[in-house]
Image 1: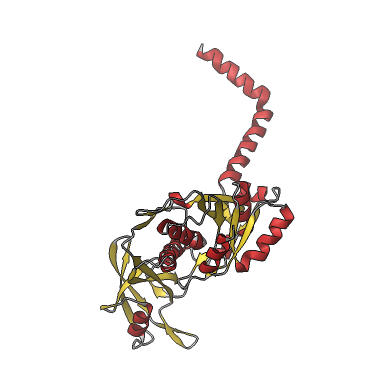
Image 2: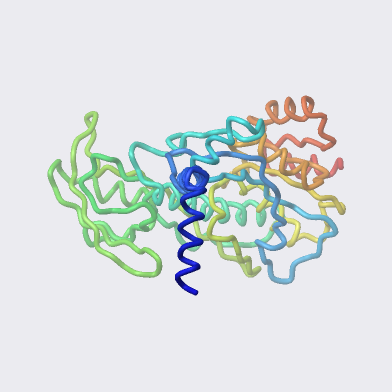
Length: 339
C-alpha cells in the first residue's frame, strides 16, 4: 500500500514538476512580499473612535451625540503594502524618517508618541476645567526626556522622568537648568529617574556644542492635573500622539457641564491642545477627513493651519460634512453653538 502511494506520488511529481516549481516560486515571492519590511509606512484613510469609550468622568452628564477622535490608518512598510501604494490612489507611501529625529529607533518614536498623548491629556483636563469653571490643582510637573541626541554620552532614555540631578530634587525644567549651571565640560552628572513605576540611576557627560554646555537631551514638562472630579483615560497601546488633544478636551468639558454641546450629532475632529487653550496643527488631515466622512460624521473640526487643505479636499470630493475651524478651545465652543 505504502509502495503504491509512493509510486503515485513520485509519478505526479515527475509529470508536474514545472507546474510545482512555478507555484513554489509564487509562494516564496508572496511570503517575501508579505513579511519583508522597509523603513516606510503606508498611510490610508482612517476612521473615528468614540471618546465615550476612552475617557471616563465621574458623575458625567450624558450626551445624545458624540465626540470622536480621527486617525490615520498606518500600515507597516511590508513590500506588498509598498507596491499597493503605487496602485491604490488613496494609499500613500511615507518615509518613516519624516517622524524620526536623527537615527533613533522605532521604539523611541513610539515612546515619544506616548509622552505626547500624556501631555495633551493633562492639558485637556486643565483647559476643560478652566472653561467649565471647575476647581483643580497642578500637583507636579514631570520633567521628561523627550529626545536624546545621537552624540550624547548618556544612558538616559526617552520617557525617563527626572526626579534628581546630582542628588538634588527637581520639580520643573527650570530646576534642571539651575542644577546644571555650575557643571563644566567633561563633568559627569548623575540623574535619578522614574520609569514604569521603578527608580533608576542614569548618568551623562557634559560636552560643548555650538558654544553651549549640554548633556545632549531635549526635555519636556508634563503637568499632572488633579480635581475632585475623577477623570480616567483608557487609550489602547497603539493609540498615541498629540493630535487628539482638542477632541479629548471637548469630551471632558461636555461630561462636566450640564448643557450637551453635541446636540445629538456625530462630531469628529483633530488638533493638539496646548495648556493655554490654543489648538495646534496636525498631520494626515486628508486621511482623517476621509475617515470621518466614511463613518457618517456630521461635522469635522480641524485646526486653523490645516483648514484650507481640509476645505480643498471637501470641495474636490464633494463631501457632505460641516467643517469647523479650530483656533482656540473657546472659539470651537462658539462654533458648536451654531450647529
